Length: 494
Image (tube, rainbow, N blue to C red; front, side, top):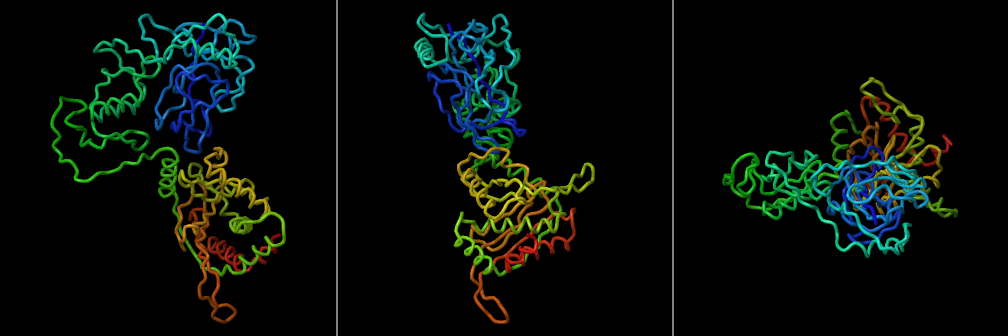
């Protein structure tokens, strides 16, 4: 015999409450090993491969690609040979439908390291089965032939695979007209209301017949109630909805004809979720809470470029121009520590920070991210260059850990890579300042009393006016410009 284990989306840490399914790595009927990644999800911070702590046959999958899943929602169910996940291969925790969703694991643990399910066994949980209750999707006891092993290796998995004759399907339950509707998400209810769908007529694909967002979207597509797109906060919005009317269907009343004329053009709705949603929330909060001001100056970067060329010609690891600018920033923050700070409005205090964790803006296929160089004030130019290169590569691969994207105290933004001269950047909340660097281009410049062609860069500095006044901000920017024009100025502080 085999028991069915339900694997739910684990807590991915850093205060994340959910994730979007990007790509399924397994199909129903596949044999999976313990700790094998089964799904790739995108959180607000990074892309994550989620490993399954059970070994066996996948009997059900929950959620389509592109679906937002909250932490704790079921991802897959796995038919595990009875006793395979017990210490010493003893008797299983149960069999049949009553064992579905039982999360008991061996004392040795699976080896998983994601927050929410570790390498030690969690307390066993049993789901109460009400008389007459519907069988949840995928909660099917699977028989194993006499020759099947009790272990979780490939032999036992093949035996289970041979015993599973068909994938699990959701079983419709008979619900009375006035009975409860199996929906726990207010977003699902809202989506149904917007499209005039009666949830009592839907069969949920979740555990115990739970109606999920994917079920509602599937019903909307099947009924032809306009295209469904994700909206703000993961709420799907129908293109054909006007004042609660969707193709003549009203959420809380009888069907009526839509009175508003159809728009002549097509519109596209892009969901503000995942990384894009987090960026939107953070930038809006920055603009809402921080009284920022910006000052800027042009600087002759000819000597800076020559200094970097000389450093790279001397042998050893190559250093990037961004690393040299980062070193200038840490030196400037040592002179003006007021700007390495944050504001605590609840206690009405300015919190000055002793360590510089330098964030730098990086554009990726997923959007703008800000990796953080920890303890940047303690690193040399070579150390900064190596860490920036490592974080940039991880950012482009989408493999940055959440801890590498949080905790910054100051941000360096090199928007010159986009071919622009200047900008008024938005402060990365809750930091107090950001230095922006434009492109370095040859321009006419007065050098030593004569007109010459020099490499000129525009530096812009945005700061929180609560932590300092213009004199401090101007002094910081002027020191940075002096270091750019005469890199030898840095030797004073070394």
